[in-house]
Image (cartoon, rainbow over all chains, first blue to last red; front, top):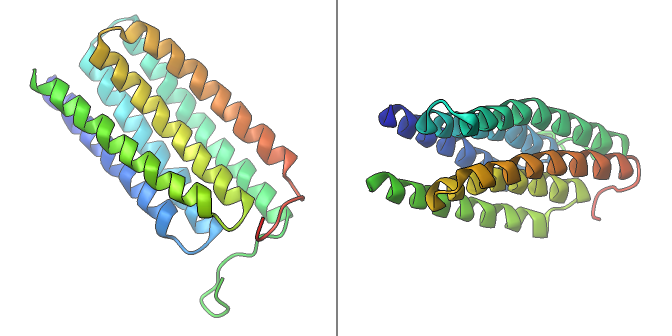
Length: 100
Length: 92
């Protein structure tokens, strides 16, 4: 059981690190939003699931699964709201021809 | 005994990721980049809180704090994004 938890935590940390590198390195606002909207949600979900597996079945693990489900719903909603606000205020997307 | 060291290493790695996000928050070209970086910092802080609860042995208290932190972070992100809609632009 402990091995499954360690594997899930390592996978979650990998996805979170990929999200951080993507937000730091991508050339445009929308591509940075792409990195943080999908990879960060997946990494947080996997890490919280690993912590719940490590705890076992109790009230604490049920609360951790509740946090995981809430983040899994709320993080894409926040990304969508942010993307719509940026598009309405005129942030231009990056194209290969015209630069930023 | 060794899983505590693994948890400590995980916390150190997450704090390094938060430092990387702070670079994006400080030099982001538009205000939405800064807001995006703050959202990622909030998501990482939930993980740090739960792991610190397991390290200190009082995970029931820390999990409640993490629940309220995630809900307040989401509400803050949505409210600030709706406030800035159509106002900010490039270079602010």
